[in-house]
Length: 179
Image (cartoon, rainbow, N blue to C red; front, side, top):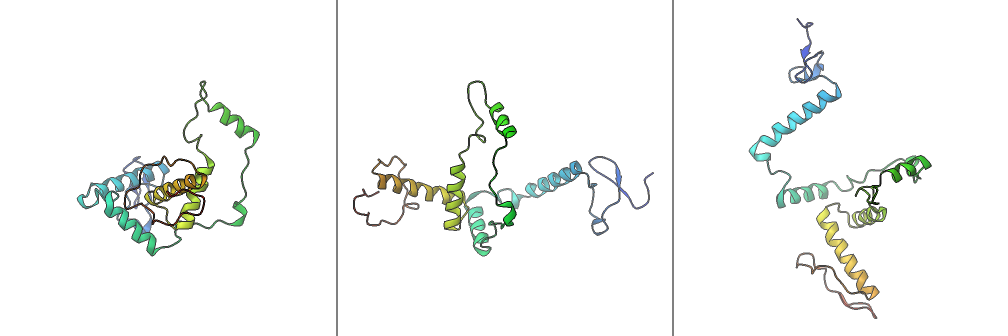
């Protein structure tokens, strides 16, 4: 027999005192593993509804995201306190850990081999354009690379643009090839 006012957790089976505000709905205790199970169950239930199955897919989802971001400018730009803005250096112990992560043939895991300049470029494009959508950043990156190669006199090896991502034609500066 369980104590009066307590409930049995659906995940771990232990008895717990439910939150007074959620008494009628709370079915799991506050243990981290039970909270994860609760979240998974609620997401599974939400995704099982027919109207929610393709909620995050397709052009409609992209449009909905773009409209929301336009209505909430700067939401994704979280301001950090100045004390957290210092650059972090690797300590000798961290450098040794990174050396251990390489395979005998010298291969490195993709996330370990990521180029910090790539994050800088993506962040810069997102900051300047005000968009964080991957499709927009890819299109802008392709234009930047093509324009940079044209300025440097290199051949443009990037795939041809379709009409939607083609930048408006501009007169090329003197001494550069048109893109």
